[in-house]
Image: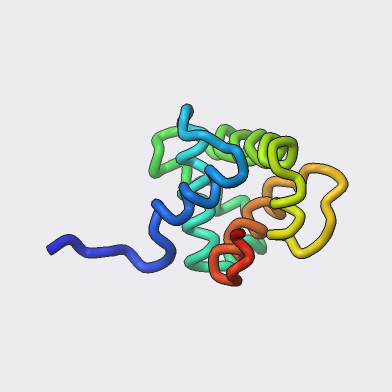
Length: 117
């Protein structure tokens, strides 16, 4: 029997990212999904994302700067692709792409708050 890790399933996170117009065509997508999962499991990680990025980087054998850059770039892409949907998830109108930590927070909160529509 396969043991399921606590927190949202990665498939649920992938679906959320797909609805924002993001595609699993690069490792950036998987960096973001894993960081969202970590943030959803332990929201206090979002208070200091400087240790969230290294944990994700270790998982994918890269560096924290790459993870942060990928989260930032995909946040901009999600905002360009689906600004209304991202604003709805955030609960406020976003006039610019959210910074990386805010983007992670929006995604993690929407998974548990039911705003992932």
